[in-house]
Length: 249
Ligand code: NDP
Image (cartoon, rainbow, N blue to C red; front, side, top):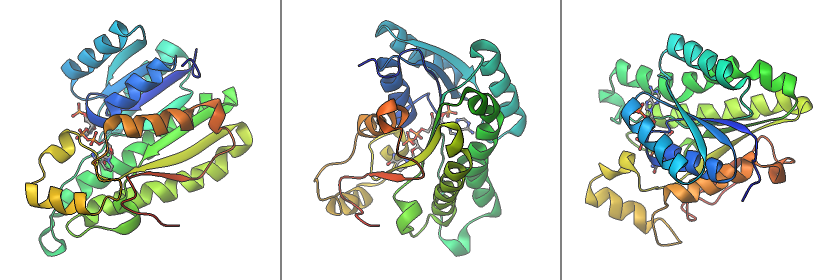
């Protein structure tokens, strides 16, 4: 597949899990991928994995919870490539807790990483994308941004916020050939969900009509499609990748 040949992509949270899979898939489709995250050792490993498969990727240390780091990272990527045509805002964290016990810091950290980080990075990269008159922005939200989840008020709020952000952005940038969409994974086996206990895992599995957890590649395929020319008439949408866990409007 060479649908993205010559395109420049940036994926946040590319050091593991869904972000790593997105980076591999975009590179497989021909894009040159800027890999952004904090863990430079793991980023280098992903870059080497992509190179070994015949693709092109360059790691950039970037902390999406820091405005300073985002600005410096975006500058470094633009200096290197001149533009970013495909932006995947994937970096995300959880800090779960029931409402009455949730610490203010856990609310702030999740909103800063999952929502404000996507806003700031998009803003830092948007001007060249607008000038270029072609762009794809894909934000990784979550099924819980649509359904809510006990113990995840901060996380669900950040993911619901990403959906509103995506829809507003889609309206603003459409006239310049840029689409903005969200992908909402359900239960995907990654390091993030590896820490869940067996009881919760069993309960989640019972809610999945397709009868299996998702893989990071399931999500990456949806992202690569939305990044392609084939998805050029799709904008402001939330694409659920959840095995039927939530089927709704
Ligand atoms: P992982 O915990 O496996 O990976 C998270 C990634 O985000 C890591 O690469 C991490 O890199 C990066 N990251 C975290 N904080 C920062 C930061 N401050 N700056 C830069 N990068 C950061 O999670 P998943 O792969 O499972 O999740 C990826 C996305 O998908 C998240 O947004 C998550 O909310 C969403 N999602 C996941 C689901 C699942 O079932 N797994 C379901 C629904 C949504 P590093 O530590 O190197 O910085």
